[in-house]
Picture 1: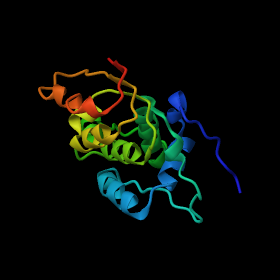
Picture 2 (picture 1 turned 135 degrees about the vertical axis):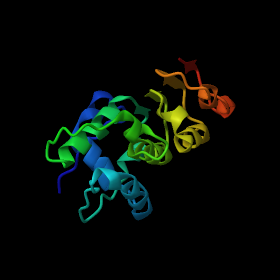
Picture 3 (picture 1 turned 90 degrees about the vertical axis):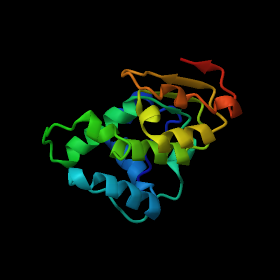
Picture 4 (picture 1 turned 45 degrees about the vertical axis):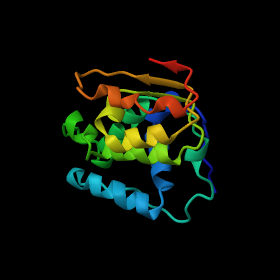
Length: 168
Protein backbone atom coordinates (compact mmCIF):
# COMPACT_ATOMS: atom_id res chain seq x y z
CA UNK A 1 0.00 0.00 0.00
CA UNK A 2 1.31 3.42 -0.95
CA UNK A 3 0.49 6.22 1.45
CA UNK A 4 0.68 9.76 0.06
CA UNK A 5 2.67 12.40 1.89
CA UNK A 6 0.37 14.39 4.16
CA UNK A 7 0.58 18.13 4.61
CA UNK A 8 -1.59 19.98 7.04
CA UNK A 9 -0.69 23.16 5.14
CA UNK A 10 -0.47 22.00 1.52
CA UNK A 11 0.07 25.51 0.07
CA UNK A 12 1.66 25.20 -3.36
CA UNK A 13 1.20 21.40 -3.25
CA UNK A 14 -2.48 22.02 -4.02
CA UNK A 15 -1.28 22.66 -7.61
CA UNK A 16 -0.16 19.03 -7.80
CA UNK A 17 -2.64 16.89 -9.72
CA UNK A 18 -1.76 13.88 -7.54
CA UNK A 19 -2.91 15.72 -4.42
CA UNK A 20 -6.18 16.75 -6.08
CA UNK A 21 -6.74 13.12 -7.14
CA UNK A 22 -6.01 11.96 -3.58
CA UNK A 23 -8.63 14.36 -2.22
CA UNK A 24 -11.12 13.26 -4.88
CA UNK A 25 -10.55 9.59 -3.99
CA UNK A 26 -11.55 10.35 -0.41
CA UNK A 27 -14.98 11.72 -1.27
CA UNK A 28 -17.87 9.63 -0.02
CA UNK A 29 -20.65 8.53 -2.38
CA UNK A 30 -22.87 11.55 -1.73
CA UNK A 31 -19.98 13.98 -2.26
CA UNK A 32 -18.88 12.15 -5.42
CA UNK A 33 -22.41 12.38 -6.82
CA UNK A 34 -22.63 16.09 -6.00
CA UNK A 35 -19.32 16.89 -7.72
CA UNK A 36 -20.00 14.54 -10.65
CA UNK A 37 -23.11 16.55 -11.55
CA UNK A 38 -21.01 19.71 -11.71
CA UNK A 39 -18.41 18.02 -13.92
CA UNK A 40 -20.90 16.82 -16.56
CA UNK A 41 -20.44 19.86 -18.85
CA UNK A 42 -16.68 19.24 -18.79
CA UNK A 43 -17.09 15.56 -19.76
CA UNK A 44 -14.86 14.56 -16.86
CA UNK A 45 -15.32 11.90 -14.21
CA UNK A 46 -13.96 11.60 -10.71
CA UNK A 47 -11.26 8.95 -10.27
CA UNK A 48 -12.35 5.91 -8.33
CA UNK A 49 -10.33 3.13 -6.77
CA UNK A 50 -10.88 0.44 -4.20
CA UNK A 51 -10.17 0.13 -1.39
CA UNK A 52 -10.87 3.66 -0.26
CA UNK A 53 -8.41 5.26 2.13
CA UNK A 54 -8.86 4.37 5.77
CA UNK A 55 -8.20 7.95 6.85
CA UNK A 56 -9.61 11.28 5.74
CA UNK A 57 -6.69 13.41 4.61
CA UNK A 58 -8.96 16.45 4.53
CA UNK A 59 -9.42 16.18 8.31
CA UNK A 60 -5.79 17.22 8.73
CA UNK A 61 -5.70 20.19 6.35
CA UNK A 62 -5.49 23.46 8.28
CA UNK A 63 -4.98 25.91 5.41
CA UNK A 64 -6.51 26.40 1.99
CA UNK A 65 -4.98 28.70 -0.61
CA UNK A 66 -5.68 29.82 -4.17
CA UNK A 67 -3.38 27.02 -5.29
CA UNK A 68 -6.36 24.72 -4.73
CA UNK A 69 -8.14 26.42 -7.64
CA UNK A 70 -5.04 26.09 -9.84
CA UNK A 71 -4.63 22.42 -8.94
CA UNK A 72 -8.27 21.64 -9.66
CA UNK A 73 -8.01 23.40 -13.02
CA UNK A 74 -4.78 21.47 -13.77
CA UNK A 75 -6.60 18.24 -12.92
CA UNK A 76 -9.41 19.14 -15.34
CA UNK A 77 -6.83 19.82 -18.08
CA UNK A 78 -5.11 16.52 -17.30
CA UNK A 79 -8.41 14.61 -17.44
CA UNK A 80 -8.94 16.03 -20.92
CA UNK A 81 -5.65 14.32 -21.93
CA UNK A 82 -3.74 17.56 -21.95
CA UNK A 83 -6.27 19.33 -24.15
CA UNK A 84 -6.04 23.01 -23.41
CA UNK A 85 -9.69 23.60 -24.20
CA UNK A 86 -10.37 26.98 -22.73
CA UNK A 87 -11.91 26.54 -19.32
CA UNK A 88 -13.63 29.78 -18.54
CA UNK A 89 -13.34 31.03 -14.99
CA UNK A 90 -17.01 31.92 -15.00
CA UNK A 91 -17.87 28.26 -15.76
CA UNK A 92 -15.52 26.89 -13.12
CA UNK A 93 -16.34 29.40 -10.39
CA UNK A 94 -20.01 30.06 -10.89
CA UNK A 95 -22.38 29.16 -8.10
CA UNK A 96 -23.13 25.93 -9.95
CA UNK A 97 -19.54 25.36 -11.06
CA UNK A 98 -17.30 22.45 -10.08
CA UNK A 99 -14.64 24.49 -8.25
CA UNK A 100 -17.25 25.96 -5.91
CA UNK A 101 -18.59 22.49 -5.24
CA UNK A 102 -15.08 21.11 -4.65
CA UNK A 103 -14.13 23.92 -2.25
CA UNK A 104 -17.45 23.49 -0.42
CA UNK A 105 -16.75 19.78 0.06
CA UNK A 106 -13.24 20.54 1.28
CA UNK A 107 -14.49 23.21 3.71
CA UNK A 108 -17.09 20.75 4.99
CA UNK A 109 -14.54 17.97 5.55
CA UNK A 110 -11.69 19.98 7.06
CA UNK A 111 -12.06 19.93 10.82
CA UNK A 112 -9.48 22.49 11.94
CA UNK A 113 -9.10 25.31 9.42
CA UNK A 114 -6.77 28.01 10.57
CA UNK A 115 -5.95 29.92 7.40
CA UNK A 116 -8.01 30.42 4.26
CA UNK A 117 -6.81 32.49 1.31
CA UNK A 118 -9.23 32.48 -1.61
CA UNK A 119 -10.33 34.91 -4.25
CA UNK A 120 -13.96 35.47 -5.07
CA UNK A 121 -15.13 31.87 -4.64
CA UNK A 122 -16.62 32.24 -1.18
CA UNK A 123 -18.50 35.38 -2.17
CA UNK A 124 -19.82 33.93 -5.42
CA UNK A 125 -20.80 30.53 -4.05
CA UNK A 126 -23.37 30.64 -1.26
CA UNK A 127 -22.60 27.01 -0.33
CA UNK A 128 -18.90 27.86 0.19
CA UNK A 129 -19.93 30.87 2.26
CA UNK A 130 -22.25 28.72 4.39
CA UNK A 131 -19.53 26.13 5.11
CA UNK A 132 -17.02 28.87 5.87
CA UNK A 133 -19.32 30.51 8.40
CA UNK A 134 -19.94 27.17 10.15
CA UNK A 135 -16.24 26.83 10.89
CA UNK A 136 -15.22 28.30 14.23
CA UNK A 137 -11.49 27.43 14.16
CA UNK A 138 -10.43 29.94 11.49
CA UNK A 139 -7.87 32.43 12.77
CA UNK A 140 -6.86 34.03 9.44
CA UNK A 141 -9.04 34.80 6.44
CA UNK A 142 -7.68 36.45 3.31
CA UNK A 143 -10.27 37.22 0.62
CA UNK A 144 -8.95 38.74 -2.58
CA UNK A 145 -12.00 40.31 -4.15
CA UNK A 146 -10.85 40.90 -7.72
CA UNK A 147 -14.19 41.82 -9.19
CA UNK A 148 -16.82 44.29 -8.12
CA UNK A 149 -19.22 42.06 -6.27
CA UNK A 150 -22.18 43.90 -4.86
CA UNK A 151 -22.69 41.31 -2.11
CA UNK A 152 -19.03 41.10 -1.08
CA UNK A 153 -19.91 41.95 2.51
CA UNK A 154 -21.77 38.63 2.79
CA UNK A 155 -18.41 36.85 3.00
CA UNK A 156 -17.60 38.40 6.32
CA UNK A 157 -21.07 38.73 7.81
CA UNK A 158 -21.53 36.00 10.37
CA UNK A 159 -17.86 35.61 11.28
CA UNK A 160 -18.59 36.59 14.87
CA UNK A 161 -18.65 32.92 15.89
CA UNK A 162 -15.00 32.43 14.88
CA UNK A 163 -11.73 33.14 16.69
CA UNK A 164 -10.61 35.27 13.74
CA UNK A 165 -7.39 37.18 14.40
CA UNK A 166 -6.59 38.38 10.87
CA UNK A 167 -8.94 39.49 8.07
CA UNK A 168 -7.49 40.84 4.81
